[in-house]
Image (cartoon, rainbow, N blue to C red; front, side):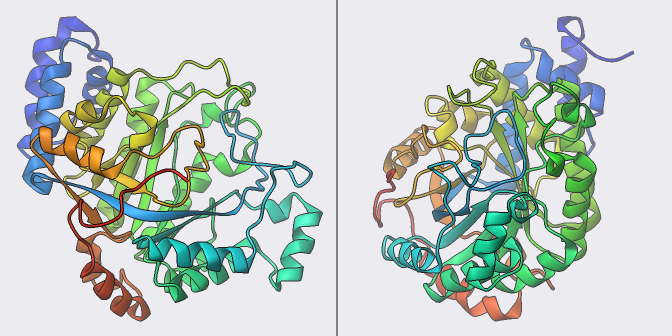
Length: 400
């Protein structure tokens, strides 16, 4: 019989000991833990304990520049403000000169990561954009992103690309100019592609296609970032299925360096403007269950700008990383949510008994793991790793 509700509180509390003893939670147990308020204190305690065993008393972040290479996208997710059509006045494809200027400024501000973020395959939808790519000397967006990464590398940054769906060949080529790649899985439920759901008009959000890309990234030995989007109409069981799918891929290939638990934020300009945002307790329970379902060596991250009042709670839930924070650029996906000041975030971590440290866009465990870092990038990684300093020794991060 599936576990659910407060009637199974004692059984769930007992189940929480399984991950700490090297055993997996079942899907029913993980789903019930997301659903049961009474077990939340024990859930958070177990997740924090598991985090401390592997990651110690250090919580990390990456000092980055967010470079929106293009905000054109062929998908139309009902929660997105980032994507634009070519005739939108806010449509923007960065020029090589802009990429270089922003990269140089970011490096001067102490950034070490260049996050290349863009829409999915706009060349398949927009003839005018295909013409722009041709003017730039490229046939596909992936080719142009490769050039953007070369520019960022030349300015002293380490690229991390999140370009939506990529082919195996595109990822293999981008590996030479990226220390890691990313793709939000969001959710594995095909139901969310159905009529009236958030991904109805988003062909690139087909779960099977995204899972294939994650698997191929593992076969290519690419350090990878993925995650789930919480509050887009998914069931709790579908959240758990997403976490289990990520865990299984990591166990097969060992390449998932971090998993983001990202909460939906309502905005007046989106189709889902009236959609309910997940509450702080819901997000914290999801972070905690992610920490217990995923293998201990996988970093669990939540964007600090999307839960500005809940940093202490997220630390208590087992989070060990805050993701990228920029002193130069806003979060173009959630422009209404400014980055936290790093010194304030450091103080919150310190009050909870943790030290905030900077990290690179490739986690240390992958630097020397055979085949995961392109040889051409090793010297750059080594040099920038020597620059990573405790918070307080650099320029405070702030929104643009």
